[in-house]
Image (cartoon, rainbow, N blue to C red; front, side, top):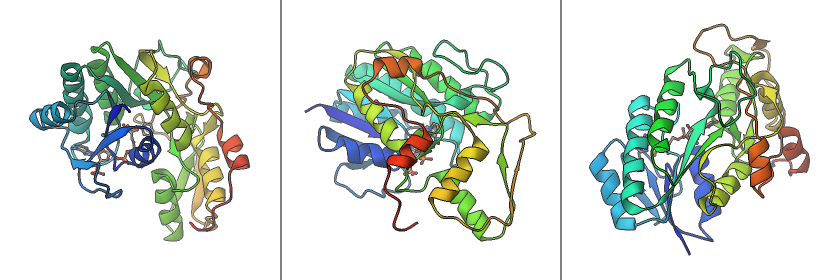
Length: 282
Ligand SMILES: NC(=O)c1ccc[n+]([C@@H]2O[C@H](COP(=O)([O-])OP(=O)(O)OC[C@H]3O[C@@H](n4cnc5c(N)ncnc54)[C@H](OP(=O)(O)O)[C@@H]3O)[C@@H](O)[C@H]2O)c1
């Protein structure tokens, strides 16, 4: 049974990943401000602390690290993403552990170049994209790594961050605009967790696009999620383009390499919804 360290076990993705990984792996996961899983496998970790990261990794001696901590949420976002990736990479190198790092399609501007394959060079337009691009550079210096570039993550059992925000705003009667000029490949959380665990034990190294094979605007995706979750309050809903320079536009990922490499299928949103059981509660 291999030893698997999951950073950000309290994240939306991390919680699913821990649950999927536990039966087959000796898992240690980390959290920062809260531990929604509340399992004995959880440890507090601030990835901005080089000492804390190196100590935790040295003590656990993982075979594989899946680094999910650091998203577009929270205070000190750039430091968590950039310093965290650098510290985790150093610690993985010291431990000789394989490193699976979660990155994002918004390392791209989406202003020419889509669909982006694994050779595409980041050209981020906002702070989150710049921090994730810098994190990729740090991770890429260590040979035994995979950088997973992925897209909007959703589940049909636990509402994703974006849908939860929309639902709350619509129920409160606040205006919500769904952007029809931002293009993504939303990925089912079960797909992404299965791909992470498959790659943990794979020989592949380098960048890999792992996302759903259905390409949708953020507006189309949002409406599918609102339908799925039965959110009927839509009086304050509008559809239109995002106009600011800081918004990445067409970030479609070319997922052909992952489709050829992995046994994990990459279904699109419609395929996932058609085969799933309708939720009993929101
Ligand atoms: N969600 C998406 O649609 C999406 C799309 C593309 C890529 N990604 C990538 O996928 C990964 C997971 O995203 P997510 O949305 O599931 O994340 P999330 O729910 O926003 O959670 C962020 C995680 O980072 C942890 N964290 C924050 N500050 C930290 C610190 N100083 N030290 C250690 N951990 C810290 C949080 O811990 P606490 O909660 O305990 O504070 C939490 O586990 C990220 O790398 C993200 O960039 C996500």
